[in-house]
Length: 375
Image (cartoon, rainbow, N blue to C red; front, side, top):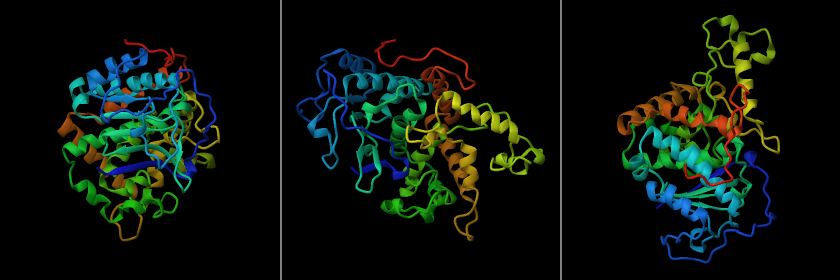
């Protein structure tokens, strides 16, 4: 099977520590035979078996198993309490929304099979951070679990959830192919393994790719686009109610220069007030003051894509991405009976309970991910 390295470019690096003391229940474990399930030994083992492995056929390996790590990188064990947090987050923000929008049977049959949790992040020789390593969308290594910020939805999206949504979508197209027309939209610009050096800045957007990694091939393009469509804010789907046909109110037609960079078609003041509410979910940047990728707004990304990669192209990058989204939605609906917007809405309806505030800043009960709950 093809091994895929899924990484963030150096500009998206976040800080890491390798000196955190392991708890008394650190997840060190001797090697075991491949595919041999660990017999339940503690509360977390029993929880994972009863709530994840048995109903959904997904194994979560948090104990450090020699055969399951790639020694190309320096990996470390997951602290027990962080594995507990992950189990709850995984259930609340991945399993439950997908099952609600599909079924237990569907997730059992159409998802990755193994999640392997790694304590600290790993880095590639070029300085990029490895947030995950996947084998054909079936087995996924997730790194930096020891640094999990359980009530920071932006951290969770960037470091865990985008990878899960990405890899899960691989299992769908590997079973039934999406329309070949999808590949033809940006067919001249797929870069394969050269994607890391092929683009200047955000030129990949002009070619119709939502991320640089999307240009690896058509399959990565599909799953990257799906994942970002879920996690990016969207003025049309997230309650902005600020669309207008009055050109005097459009962002670039506003008399206020601070509002002129906003996308056309939206009342600049209403749009500005709506987008600022993202702060109610927490800081929009990490502890190094680098913006979280998932704090972006879809319309603003599309505005940056709204030009052609070359003069001979028929469509702008924005138009290409919109064409891909239309094919994706039709494929999910007709092939799998999945409404992408409904799935997205269900996932995002849980954000306030992760953060402890809704989008408008009102306090709501915050989920405690530190204790296992079978409910």
